[in-house]
Length: 547
Image (cartoon, rainbow, N blue to C red; front, side, top):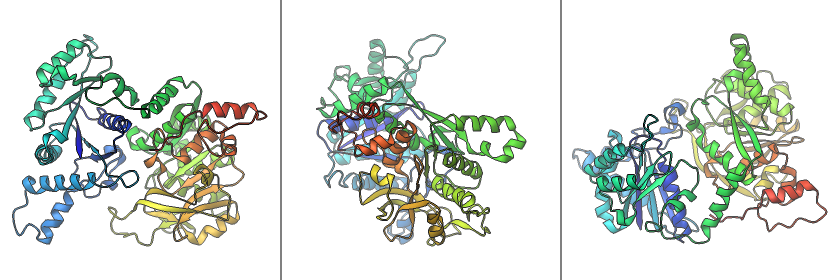
């Protein structure tokens, strides 16, 4: 097993994730099996209760396992210390996770490890020390350190400055990790003089061409273009797929506007997976994505009275979009605005996708305006409602927020009774397995009454008791999913619900379904098909990828 540790310096959000995933893609192109680990050094046992404004999407730290060991007496009364107890636990955990099978139960050849934060953060010190020791545990030949740093260009001089990178690498080396590869993020191409300077002061041999300049472009191809092949072997045919995607991204001219209606719209990172899923789907439809951020609170009647300008601006944004997306969330704030967006999308036949909370609120909207239950609500927002359309799951512990959600991959079975556009998007699969993160669910007691009025629950859990997928008939695309399909969306394999939203937004969903939901150019199109079919064939002319 080979390990590649990706660290960052100078500032957070430098692009470690892009670099690690790009290197991983290049290695996969060389025929290697690759797995990955993402580490965010927080002390929280359950980061699921973080405010998205705090960090956007977060992951969970594992220190609790050390504390549990101490509570059980596994350390035999010894003082629990960062070194060796926590550092040993980190190394053991990395070894265990990296050894788990990937891709057809095959063990990985390379493990990409992204260490969150920046070098020098006090929260990350135990991890840096753990990996300092880990390089000797696995052997230096099996351990590579990639450091991502910033090379700023002050507008006053226009000169590329290497001092921040020098200081960052110096601090990393002082902690016992010496980079084998330095990735310099810069607005413009880094000059040879800058590369030589970084090589000299960062102790990276220039003959190995270990200084790689990376410009801020969202393409995996940049890593292949900027490296000369000494660090990573030349990829095989696999990279042609990525290159075609990159070219398609640059060629896309027609725009698709999607309204993202949420309450954390001031920080894009709060919905980063949703944005990526929309981008992946738009890329496959040969469209340039334009996400229109709509603060859900500004769609509510109360805002109309308090701040009519904000109210009308929000509705103007919503009405000018081709489709609506209401992502997951919690809490009462902004829910009435999301419900209003769902109502508008339903009445105006605008493509709508509700994810998790977005699905639940769409069901509440339908119950209020179609079934006539004016006080229909979620018990999360209105515990005493006479029509609790959305309720807490029975297994939930009402006295504790953290660690009580239905989490992880779960199986959803498609209904055999109702025709389903979502099932067709999943290529008529009998079931799908997607990731979940929720504490509330659609109340099974009201399902039959809701379905009688036209809203169908076309996907349920294995027991058939939990509503997973919702659709409305006689609508271009009105879909809600209880799970989070964005979590497993990939650039070369877009999430089906998101792909359906984009296709419906550009008016191509019926043709796409008629062609068997195939993105491959191998799908034959008869000569007598109309121009829309021919346009769709060209639009989706891209290979199928098995990743």
